[in-house]
Image 1 (cartoon, rainbow, N blue to C red):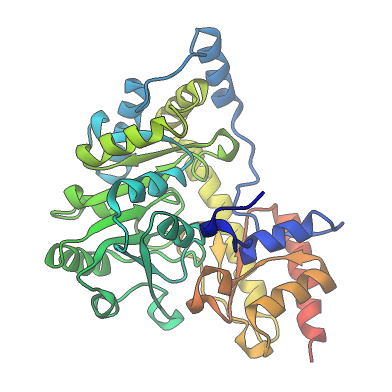
Image 2 (spheres, rainbow, N blue to C red; image 1 turned 90 degrees about the vertical axis):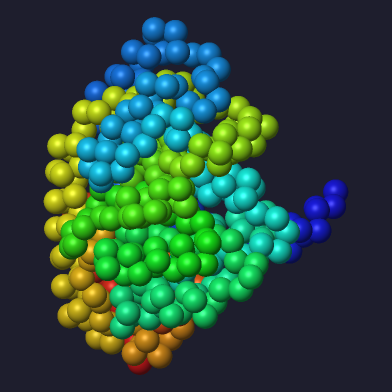
Length: 384
């Protein structure tokens, strides 16, 4: 067997390598996994079972059930002021399918997509798989790992078609302020760009506000909002995502998806509609828990030798600076795993701007986080 040329040199990312190593080890405290440790609420599970018993076990409408898409619209209007109609919504197999379909629909060979570093690793692969070119715009801790308009404008060429934004951000946990988003919106209009706005962590904001990019003046017709149920409603295993955008793009993405997934799991859609309509109070409860975890870990990290860490703004990630250890991100993470059995992700896995940092996911109980911080502090104290 011979693989296609485009996949012949495919290698697992720095993140995947860590996860593969963990599988062969015992007593590992995993601070690498970006998945809430809360199980899906039982009434959401009951809603799925009820739907299945009522006959929702057949092929669903390819774009998603109308009532489910309407509930998505109601949720985003209620929480973020985004006006949209059901025909502007596509239900997908996880949030990760949204940019996958959008790039298939929009990119011609050689078209460019701006990725703001540090970025969620699969973005890069998705761009290249669609024949596009990824333009990686670096950011700095001093600028809050948010792109400046000057940096973005310098990166643009006549072939640039898409700007991909992620706020709250995986891996940094940073939230792009409204003022900065407004400046970016002006550039988007000036240079006739389209924005893929990954807002999967919209429910987890600790400082500032979540500004849905499509709500900015003139941006709705230039934006595909990417979101889903995994992070907000602890439904990672249900694989329910959705995109909200211009009807023409949504229609094209729907057609492309028919040859890939042919619609989204029917009971999972119905459970998601129930969750979106009834669980706002749970979002508040879990956000408080994550905030407490992030605050604890931040304080512990800042008390450790050769580590500094900014406070959390959103999502459930911290991105501590470990440059003073003298180790690269990759070397630090592997040594921490081997010596202390604490798993984290090297910042370099998220682009060049991530070198000298590591991603810590506060998705474990406070008891596990205490143990992990104790191990990490001992590890750092022993580094020469």
